[in-house]
Length: 146
Image (tube, rainbow, N blue to C red):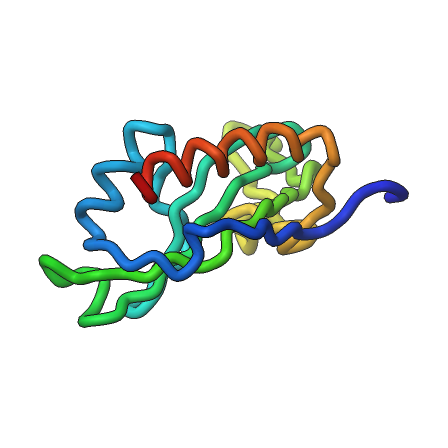
């Protein structure tokens, strides 16, 4: 789409900040951030869902464990560069099974795709979200850096 971008990294002084994971979680969750999917032992994400129109648009804050694993008590993390991310989902899966002779037949496509697969892992981001992202980054910086 013209005028759209796939993913937008956002410059911020929070990048490189080191903090205890528990302290970070205590600061971000009240602001509306949640622990994003795709956590591993050494890295993960905090996501702020901006919109769910045509998929999900997030402000994502990557974190990396620096003195242990993310599931360890007291682990410290380093924040990565925040970015906007759009994750679009397929709209055409059949959620209405056919009923025939009292038996329910399951659409094979739905059975194979138990979880909805993304159309594109990183979809386009509408520029209308840029001011929202800027405001969220300002709030993040005030919360983390003060």
